[in-house]
Length: 280
Ligand SMILES: C[S@@+](CC[C@H](N)C(=O)[O-])C[C@H]1O[C@@H](n2cnc3c(N)ncnc32)[C@H](O)[C@@H]1O
Image (cartoon, rainbow, N blue to C red):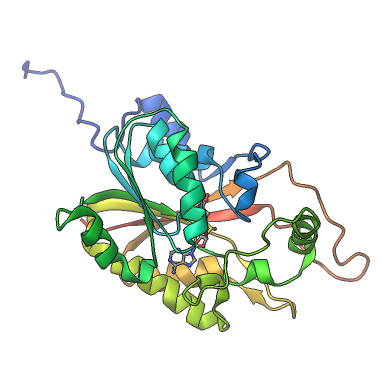
């Protein structure tokens, strides 16, 4: 080192320069999902690849390993492939895994990508079977679990989306499978199960790895608020350090006229992306 010249600390987080870094730290952002293709419409609630890329840019570097325990039709894996990250996705419904694997193979990109068919409650077994006891250490976890039983209950905007899907002959919920988190009948059991799955992943995450859990607070059919984001944040704080929430806003969704003219019913056009850190 030249005497008197201060060396910049090495960027150990990501491949961004300082300007890009600062921009990425704003606590809210707008991403409007593009209209979905016919294949993508097979899944009732996929998130956009752009959303995953937004987080990959900040929380990972090229070659990092990324885990998604509720992989759906594989948006995380596609975003990783296109961004030269490695990925593992786990999905309970074999039909989604099948669609996701086929879809993933049509995308150009780099890295290793493993789409595993199974229940995230048995993640150790799934990872060890796939990697024969050489399971990678993950640098980042990003996922969006079922928002409890939201897809199964009619309410406001969700109701009209579900009606529309029904009319078009599209699937309205994830599955009838026993271990589907969207089929748990009791809210508190849902929070407990989801939290215990995310906590069980701790041994596979590197020290200092970040997690982004994407959820939404919801109103039950009887009007009771179910603050999924806040309940999950509290539960997971036993194992991981809660850093902050980032708010993903959508501003191209239609506004519904719910509750008018007597009651406040919100048009919910944002999601909470809860950011945790696996303690260093
Ligand atoms: C919100 S969706 C994820 C969508 C995904 N991010 C995408 O873009 O395709 C939640 C997924 O979790 C899956 N799931 C529910 N319970 C599960 C479990 N116990 N293990 C693994 N996957 C599960 C559902 O089948 C559903 O596809």
